[in-house]
Image 1: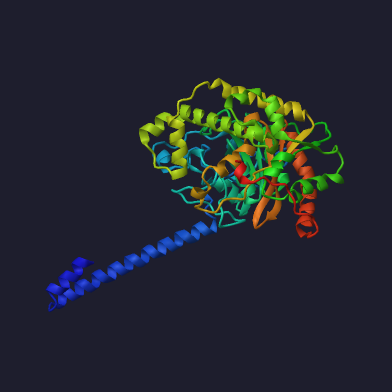
Image 2: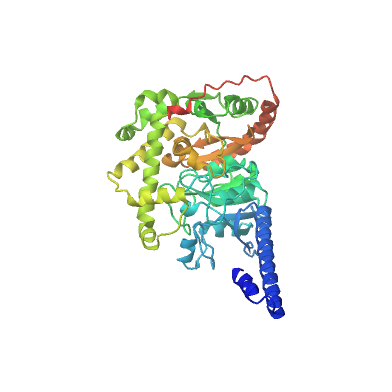
Length: 492
């Protein structure tokens, strides 16, 4: 533009110069207007799908015989998948453009995707995720952060953020994600939808890029508990009919003390919901952190101060530390060579965690796995075949967008403390929404021991309607005492 102005000054008396200058300026203005229109169009498209989708396509259900024996269990349902599953003919991007650039299109289909298509569901696209499945906020600096439909100024949770948003915004009936240290449970809670993390190795991970094999599971989101259960029956390959057994709810009172939501909106709601339902034993209450400290002896090697056990801090902080170390160790084993060779561009939070994982020298790794074995046995001993542990899914509301610098490690540590229970035991966990508090979604989680997936899915379906009725009553009532015995965050 400056060259054009200088040309005019030097040849002001030449009319041809004015014509050329006019055409140049018009071209620049037209280009600027076109760029603005493209940007505006991109923003509109992103808002239309809440930034959930990375790419759209249609994978229709597999052809069926002319006269199929019965209606397929997922017939008529649509779903989306996290950008971590292989789709034949597409590059699996792992949430990062450098990973996408350095990998070829897949020549196979993930087994879970094949199972869903065989059972009548239609896949409509891939969703945005945290880079390398290493974040818990849902923010992605390359592809944008999916917009949380329930509270748009806050993060959607990760790493399966796009899948959760696609379900919460009602673009699909259900969506697949993965859960390593909370990547299904946390976004389900933040987006106010149902989420299910199955027992470890209960669903095949063939065709999935691993983050940490000892913790990775394939989970799913839904708005409807019957859809959550139907998807589970397909992926878990469970028997359609099993003997019904009584259910025993065990409330982790110390963990609800950690939560910033009053127990009247969580514990009280669940307790009232089962009062008039048949097949439920009287609920029990436990200090879960003390139980873990007493029954997972290998945690002593991680040197947590036992003076805070009464608050549910010390043992679960140790357990979450083991979980994070195990994830980091296995991530390094899987991807160290690629990270060092490619030197990928990563967002600040992800870069910090990836580099820490790659550069750490891990000693006495066996104790990490020993803690997992002990934790699984401890949960089995507590719950047996009829117990369901009731805990807050997350103890803090979703952080504001672009605010993680202000949270330092506090949010991550408090989140991992409750998320480590299912991850380290290998058990199954269902996140169930319970309305809102202070403008943000509230949820509780039901945890069962390894292998009790059908039992837990059936329980969620059974209790869900009663829970929502009690939510309506509790949230409209102004008479309930607002007392929780909450801990001060400084205890962390």
